[in-house]
Length: 329
Image (tube, rainbow, N blue to C red; front, side, top):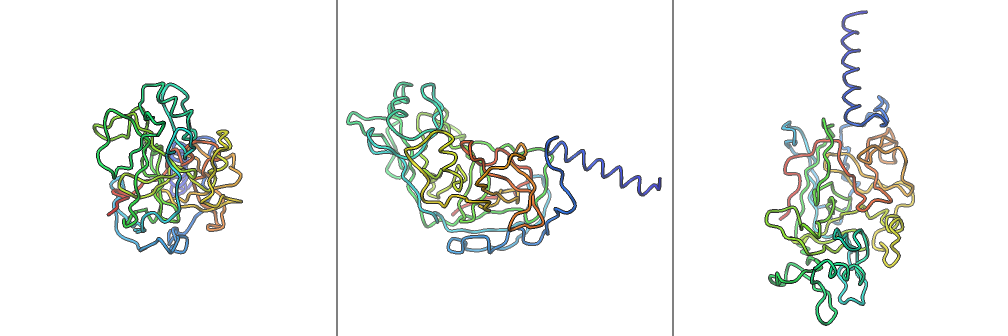
């Protein structure tokens, strides 16, 4: 065999082995006919023009130390309708929460059964008048002797900036999404994050304490203590998630549900995120697949929102994100 052809064959084999370790044995192979142009994968026209403040390419550094170009996307905060969150009293029904205590744990509606479970586990969250203790992070320091349903107040004057690689680059290992870690951004400019904070342990920050339950609205989002609204779910298939968890008291009515296949945003590694009305069965360990879409008729690797898991965002990412990829002011 010609020596140059031998080298090409060897390098091709090495490349396939690398993809095997990145994507697993049961993952569809990247084909040459699925190449997507590196120019404007993330197009300005995809975004909500009422919340998009600026769109441009800038030099950036990726988390693996390499440099390249990123899209710098700036959005105004809180572009979507939201709520409800914490119920006022034990007789009312609020939004959603995930409880990780011993009694009646799981993803569920914020209502009497959940708050009574917290009381059983030693959390003092119901006052003597049957009202739910609430903290909006804006009304003074709460009494540390009590526990609270968390519903942060909004700040509609913030600007959110995202840096996303213009050319997605595969990582050698999966980036497993941690609690509250940024996953990506929606087309409205709403941050998409991983799991909400634990009730038992609190948020993953120094000196955090547990006992408080973060409230989510029926579409799976809430305000950060800093005031910007963000998702812990992909809301376009939220009603399917609620049905999978036998939740009937609330539904996501503020976000249109996917009827076919819908581009909903981009992960921080540059790959798109889609909502499928019928979740495909061939997704990989991060919930991704390669397929043709309306936006990418030549095919592209993209993440698919789960219609059954809570939360339903990608569990991990395949690509390399930009350093300091999110900020607000």
